[in-house]
Structure formats: C-alpha cells, structure tokens
Image (cartoon, rainbow, N blue to C red):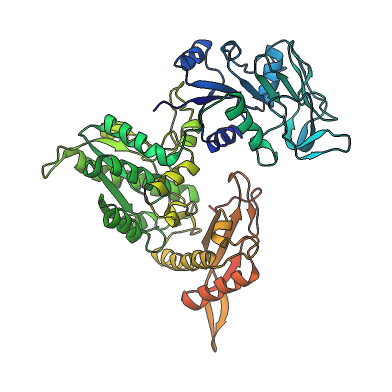
Length: 539
C-alpha cells in the first residue's frame, strides 16, 4: 500500500523529530530529510503523487547570513501546502520577497499569541478569548530574528507585542508560517494546529496505523529475504525484540536469533527472553552464556568509557563467532545471508542516513555496527522507518507482552554502567536483586490522583551500585556493607529530565525491602538531581 506522506525538511533544529512524531500521531506517514536537498530531488520525491504537503523546520542559524541554508525553490513551485516553523517561517518570508531582521533580543519561552485574519490554519483554535473577542494561543517561542515585512500575497495570521508578525499566510497558495513551535508540548494547541495543517489543509489520508502496518512489513520482509536465512542479535531490548517478532512472523524458521548473555542483565532477564521467544513465539534462539568472559575482561577496570568499549567490543566478538557458524551453514541449512538489526528512525535521522544522503554511522546501542560488511552479509532493518512509540505499538500488535514492550530504557552495557567503578560478579548480583525490588514496588504502588502505577508515571527508574561501604546496625550487631542509590526521572524527550517526586511511603517500603532482603546492602539513598546538570544514568 502506498501511503500519502508529508515531507519535513530539517534545517538543524533540536526538535525536528518532534514535528515528525506529531505528524505520525495523526496517523500520517512522514519523512525527515536534510534541507539542502536539490530542486531535482524534491521534484522527483513528489512525482508519484503521494506527497501532500511540506513542513520547514526551525534552526539555530540566522537567515540574515548569506551562508545559511535556504529551502529548495521547488518547495514553493510544486503547488503543495507548505508550513514554515520558526526558521522555516523566516526563510519562507525572505525567499518569497519579505524581510527578516536580526532581533535586538531573543524571545525564548512562553508567549501569548493573538490569532488574526481568520485563516484556515487557526480558525476556531484558541486557548482563551480576550474580553475584546480576540482568540489567543499559549505557545513556546525560541528565536532571535523575526519577520519585519510580509512577502507579497501574504497576510498577518498571528502576532505578539514583541513579535508583530508571529504568523503569516498566503491562503491562495496554501503557504502558512508561524514563529512559534507547535511541535513542543509547551504550545498547548500545537497538536491541533499540526493536525489542521496535515489532515485539513493538506487533505492527507490518516492511514499510517501500526496494526495495519504488520501485513505491509511482513510482505516487504518476504520480498527482500525470499528463501534465504537471517541472523539477528537479540539483546532483550525493545527494538531488537520487536524486530525479532516481526521477522519471525514473516519468515519463521528462516530466522535465527543470537542472544548474548554478558552477565550484566537484570534479574532473570535471560530466562524471560528465552521464555518469550522460544517458549511462546517458537523462534530459534541460540543463547550464549559469555558472562565469565565479560566479567574477566572487566576485572580491574573502573573508567566508564573503558568499560563501555570492553563490553561493546566483546559483544561484537562473541556475536561474530556465532554468526560465522550460522553463515557457514550445517545440519541441512544453507547458511545465513542476512543480518537483521533493530535500527529505528531516530537512529537513521541522527546519523545523516535520510534517504537522500549516504548514511554515516548508525548508532549501535543494540545494533551490531559494521558487522554486515565484516561478515559479508546483507542488511535487514524492518524498523528503520519507525519511531520508538510506533515500535512499541507494533510490538503489542505482534503479541509481545506490554510489560516487555513498555519497559524503561536499559543501557547496552547493562549493569556494567550502573555499577560505579570496577565491575564484579558480587556487585552485579547485589544490584540485580536491589533493582528488581525497586521496579517491583514501582509497579505495585499506585498514584491515587491518576490511578496509574509509579512505574508508568516515571520515564526511567533503576538502581545504582556505589563502590563504598557504610556502617549500619542490624539486630544487635554492626554491619559494614554496600550502598545503593535509587534513580527515577520524568521526561518527555530524555534531553532534559526532572527527578520524580516519589511518595515517601514508596521510598520507605523499597528501602526497607532492599536492606532486609539483600544481604550485603545496608544503606539506600535517593538521587534528587535533574538533567541538566546531572545526566540520567550515572556513568
């Protein structure tokens, strides 16, 4: 099925991906591509008729400088609706004959914008109405430059006291632009505005639905793979798990998963992975217990980056050895020719891998970077067009349990970076048990106001092992045991995060259980640092 789509041209904004996510949330397919694509590329992209509109993103740059990027002229010549956001508005104004000037001061943060002109984009969209009857929007601004003169054919669509032209529209050509950011949650009606543009003005069909996507994806995998065999490095994380379930749905026993247990997984995680994929999905999984190898190489190493490199390098070595066996073929198998990875769309965007450009390095959290070339295997990436929330939706639709699919993020090096300093088996065993108690109680403790569990109310929660001992008293004796720190944060994008204000009763129960049930830990602390200045993980 060919989906109608929206093209997002990225001028370098930190929140361009949020635009794409909002469009996808409207069940419309979209793609992000670099802003410096050629006119020819744009015309070619549109020639099959599936392109229904274009969005120009924000940027940290200034259009007043000659060296900064402009939108390809073809964008304005196709006869399609165009929405400019922040820098996108400024370059639209300048390219179409308006004027942009450098602002005397940056406007950053909340602003109340007055809607004007009764345009199709903002009609009946407002947060409140003034006594004079003016529709007002609560929005998020982040800009220095501003449009000071409208291009020919445009009318004023929105304004603030400090930014007289905060929105403009040429409704005959269906060109719209706003100085604020509708993609961020701080703009209260941002979702409604983007829905209006994508569904209303562009008239795009809302047919991008994960449950329906399964049949499409299965067919694509079958066409790509044929009767050949596939290897997948199964980490137990969301991306590799969903990729495995989807590929197995498509080609069954032609897929073999390799699960490398490095000894730094959460409590019983290895068994859970095997139970799910072998027991329930009946997939072929080779489990490699390499915990002694990993822990041996980590002995005496305390530098965080050194630990990451050791774990990443060993994972590749172990996986390569297993993959080489599978490639060679035996027992009636002709040998694998494909390597599958759980690459998702943000990885592709961030690595410069939009389809118009050569991909640079795909991030390798759970992906086996560089191995396709090293092993002489073709690459299969069935999730590379999906955002994380879409991957989770797809996982549930494929029958994976929601508690697996919606688990909090877990770093590739596992507990290796949640044990501060040197990694030892003793530390990992203590941390596993303490962390399991914390997560169990978060799942059990429900917030009365929302009715949700505190696991659902936090974006990421985990326990950190501290390589220090403290004095304690248990019974009639003194103890000299280890300390752990609990960490729980709330965030919408993981770029910034606030520490979660967990109820004292919950913290009390967790602390009591850890100290009483995990012999070797006698003190529990709670991390009340936000990001920034701290990071979410400790290492």
